[in-house]
Length: 173
Image 1 (spheres, rainbow, N blue to C red):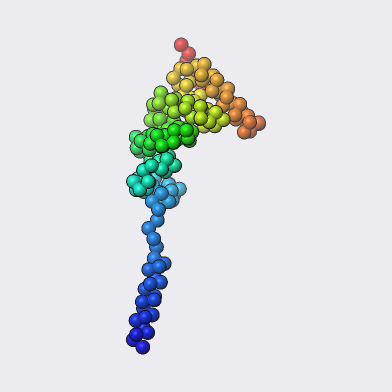
Image 2 (cartoon, rainbow, N blue to C red):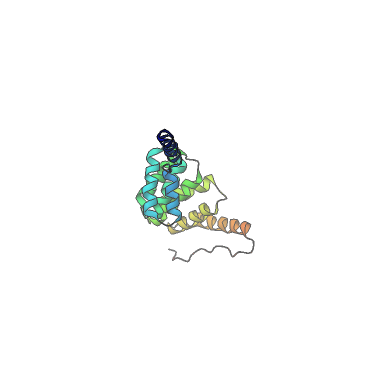
């Protein structure tokens, strides 16, 4: 009887070990935190994931987004620049970099990123609108005019009834 009880205890212990929760993927944890609006925790977890997979361009792009949401803009730029290094022809990395540089109030760097994004994805509304706004802020009037016109064209294709984007008024010298 004691032997049976010991054997039963061993079987139950083995079953408990087999169903014990396994550590989750840090990227999945980071995404769960980010979707819950807990960006500081998401930023911490995404850094763990990046240490495990430093050469993963998609993960670096995700890390850039999460760090940006957490307000860690310099770290976001580092991740996005590495994503670009790993996958230079991926327009989403360039767009995300342009967005972060805009938030950092670096219009020249944002302009360069958006310009590259438009070269890679000329029909991407985010890239074209970013280029229009950044070129305009730098006083590149001819390029801004072209980008605003392209942006309006893309918006009409997406929603024919929508009002086209308008160029903000600024003093011209």
